[in-house]
Length: 555
Image 1 (cartoon, one colour):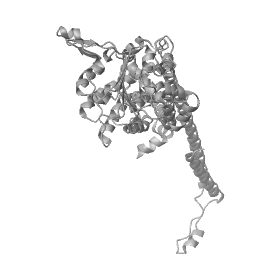
Image 2 (cartoon, one colour):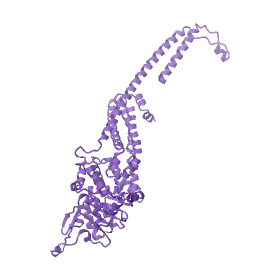
Image 3 (cartoon, helix red, strand yellow):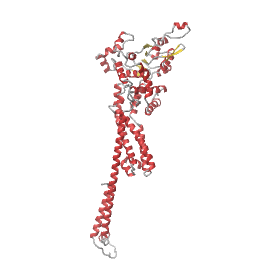
């Protein structure tokens, strides 16, 4: 029984007791003339109630009991209606959660028959395994190199000598059975070393033409060591070749078949004239020596022999001893030449991903000290590369977790990569939009309380609440998709190294679990408000269904 009903019953019982006492006192006498007596004596001398008053009081008690009965009946009706609204809200919330789970199960996958285009992902996994064979702690370097080639971009490795940088380029060339070119630059290198000698016969005809066969303009994959030692005589031609895949040979401009150029250096560029060349390398990776644990593994299980062979000087016979991929290339020329084009057509980039990239650039340029410059060209190419990453993983939509690749793209100095990584971890699992939806729900609840009885205003409000519900269902689907099966958005990402993916998953899972609960709780409140308004709920119903929103409304 509620507090209201209990108070009414107590009042009725008190009234009935008073009436019975009055009836037992009997008729009264006319009081004697008034005289001054002490207050206590006056109280004791007070006459009983008026004659016949007990019967009127009994009638009043019956009326009170009837009122209590009516109150009890009204309360029962209210409770029944409230229970009905709660049940309807629970059913509607269960349907919304089920819709989010269903959306998560097929989130961002390409249509059947298009995903992977003939098993592209399986072939890519085989290619990664083939390129990693015999190498220790080069998982991330291999994946980034392969992604760069598929995206039509170039990659820069910065690190000390003897860390298998050139071997990675050779393995990519053998993987696609392409023409491989390798050169070490010095301060005194001349253009002929990269682009080929001048044709003597052409010079006799007053033509300035190079013999490019076997040189960089003829290569499918190239490795250029100490690339920042390139002088101005080499630089301009190299920039055009890298960016436009064009080479000016005499009076004609020819297209070059270059898929990917692997640059290597022991140090960062020192002069401003090299900034343009530095910016041509979309992917950048600092290559470390093998760790202590990896060194023991390399030396102790036979991998050391393969690693040592791989690190021999270019052109030695030992190079042929490395396990080659199968005779048939794992990846075809079509894979390398058209994957980027297909990805740009098939994969969409959600606004949330674009906003995340824009916020990261703002952080790097405005809030970091010293500021980290990020060119417009680099951002545009970064988005295209993430589309390729999504497409080759069988997805039709870029995920926010693909932005983890930006730690290998946006830095200017190697130590800035960790800043980018930390910022991404802090922002990937946070959702500022959820706080905004909290404010929106408060506003809609206040309008609902003020507009009760206004059918037109209530109908418009129901439509707005439905839009918020759909937004939350999409958010919840994204969280479910990320967490389903042990965070496959990260651990199943083809382009994240295994150790890197595990570290990211361990850092993000607790944050995602918290985000899931927050979204589910807010979704339940929104659905409850929608059901209440659709069923003509009154202010008291809203206060009982959403007490916290009601308290905030009263403030």
